[in-house]
Image (cartoon, rainbow, N blue to C red):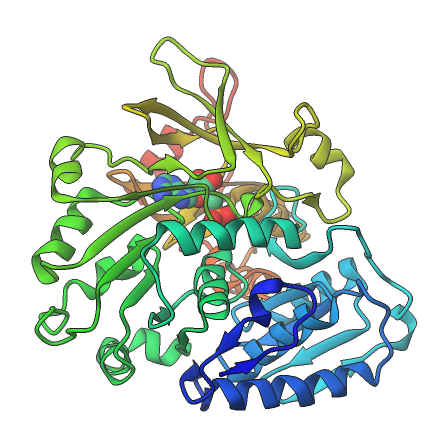
Length: 479
Ligand code: AMP
């Protein structure tokens, strides 16, 4: 066993089994002792820049081992890290960099560090230090930086280690990019337990057979993804317990878990454990948890519960209606200290009304038998393939084109799920849709690019003088 000397977070200081695999990246694998050596030498490299404690560091890359090495180094040196996956176009990365004013951008693909001396004085040193800032889509057009502190991570870690049935022998299969806080499950899980994390590049994720090969090769037992991701893989006859014997726990978060998906998992993996969890990035990964047993599946097949609220947090229902549905307000140490430099929005969303921090989620739900159920959303935040999208951000981007005078983006649903997003614009007759799509893709990640953009002369309005979204859908279907 060996000790990791990480000052910031207790759990990374624990003893780890040095011969065991720690990180299996897209480029190479590292045992715990190799990981320690890489972290020690990368820390020395970073220290040469003399950054003040609390200085934010951008980490740009994909699923390289070095991404994890960079994260641990930042945690250890007291630099809040901002994970940015390659799914973000360059302009968005630059925008985030200009918002946080980081002097350092680590590029784990090209293996280099960009240094901007003029930003070096920036520092956010708090008594409860910020561990990471994850940028999510924001309806005003600017991505929002959710700041998560040490105490929130420790609170999350305690819950993860007590209620999820994990152990130091767990091998986590990572699918989500590091810029999506779902990946914090595997990250904190493998680090705190001294377990193993398997990272998968986009190419592997898109090739299901390769994905199955890696599950087998590393004997992965903990699956973490959004429900949409697994539903595609469940179509494959290869994806079965007898082929991938190690898989035991299927952990979901980020969007509605349909009971059909659970049924299919239980058919293909009869001895598995399926866990549903719920929560926004603003409350550190998740706040509720439940094992979807066969009994639960049968009892609540119309709408599966998202679970019991974790210890040390509370969920209040605000403005309850006659069906006992209210807006979910999360209270607890897992709640973020707020969006990065966004006092206006922080006042609305993170009201200071209790002893502990609270966050108004914009989600609606209800309690039954002590269990929380998700009902729907208040605003224009949608989930497409598990990715969080504020539709207003797409409109804002479209409107930045001189040829576009008005824009409205709506989700097209299949059942309860968003199947695609369509934008309707009013603009110049000579508007070239492909050029417009290309232009917005410089700023928006691929999953935020609408499937279609429809040019109209005017929008249809309903009797309340609101844009008639149903009529827009009819127009789209008739084209
Ligand atoms: P994100 O910050 O990307 O994790 O997205 C958070 C939002 O995803 C929540 O506010 C919910 O609207 C939705 N969400 C997360 N988990 C679930 C779940 N288990 N069931 C339904 N919706 C969920």
